[in-house]
Image (cartoon, rainbow, N blue to C red; front, side, top):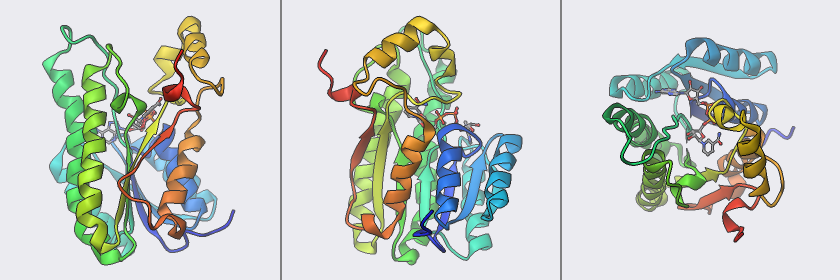
Length: 253
Ligand SMILES: NC(=O)c1ccc[n+]([C@@H]2O[C@H](COP(=O)([O-])OP(=O)(O)OC[C@H]3O[C@@H](n4cnc5c(N)ncnc54)[C@H](O)[C@@H]3O)[C@@H](O)[C@H]2O)c1
């Protein structure tokens, strides 16, 4: 693989599995020095081991994105290890399903804390370092559910819509420092988050029927776009929301 990201210092949250692991492995393959962060130490160490086995450099950090102290430590330890930070990928997220009259307070608070407040705090902690970088990048993993409506996902959808709004605000503020900020909106991607839903063959079939490309996404579909946004080729792209869903959201029927 072309090492167009050689020397780029990157931090990926939620890197212990699914989309986050694929992003971390892809950025490392491009030459990034990686900090990988996750609440699950075991899974996160596996991601770091995969990167090292492939000849890359990785620092594994156990972090709960719902805790401010953890987030500040994550950024500080990354900067101490690599001497700075060029690329932050806010990927960690949790799902929350339930119609509006059934949503529990605990679910509201936790989902907002991880999916939206965690992204905001990580961005706040990383911003001074990304500004110093001169070619800083923030990639926020939102969701198609932050754009379209889904009655079963009021909490999740509103956190992801919030991430899109935050992306636009940060893009404007940080543009003059050479920092780009973009949001990715994946459709259904085969990971642990989606597994309970697609375990039901009827739901799986219905979901695939709604996707013009007639397949579910895989984490690498997202990882490649992150690698592009992290590269010099994408230095004039900011404030965007890039949908990665095989055509799902533009399909009328
Ligand atoms: N899978 C999909 O269909 C899909 C679609 C659109 C958007 N997304 C988004 O992509 C991102 C990654 O999701 P995924 O599908 O890979 O899910 P996943 O559940 O496979 O992976 C999420 C990772 O985040 C970690 N995590 C959870 N809570 C955390 C916390 N408090 N602090 C730190 N780490 C934490 C988990 O341990 C896990 O390793 C999420 O933001 C999700 O909302 C997923």
